[in-house]
Length: 236
Image (tube, rainbow, N blue to C red; front, side):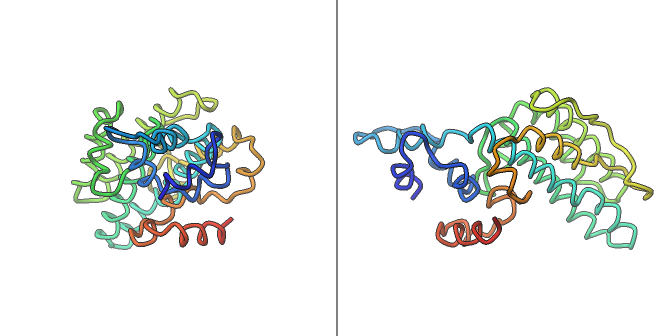
């Protein structure tokens, strides 16, 4: 499907407005793996056009991923505060997944279909340092344990952000969630820093929803480009 669309985009590749409607798992499928034969050259050309996001799109998507984390990082504690330990564990697992996808973005790797996410993450440079904290957050049986491991993970990923050098350094240390007794990163600080570097006016006008698979993960939706296009157009 993407190979056919790529030929219509020409040598310049997708327009800025087209990228948010391209699921990462589809981009990973087209650009990954070995090509044994491509006599017409269509696949090779498509892989070249879709190899990675344009710089400005990359910065925008990174900002959106940090924003996702910021929206839920306090919920691990807030669920536990009302006695909802299962809810706290579910939020922690969601944050682990979002951190994994953030690291893939940072290392310029498209996130694959869900069953391959752990395998793709395991090949990243940062996986060795980060995986113990992510496993700890998933295995913890109470809020303090989840919070401690997640904050360790936040700080590792925050330092990784600073090492990439896309923005001015952002303090990567954990801090209180306003006046509440929870420790978080306040990940929106990283989102804001990245947005300050997004200069493309088309991207600056977009909401912080990002690419389609940053706000939707239905297999049936992501298999239908017509539905994706309609949903993205409705958002933007």
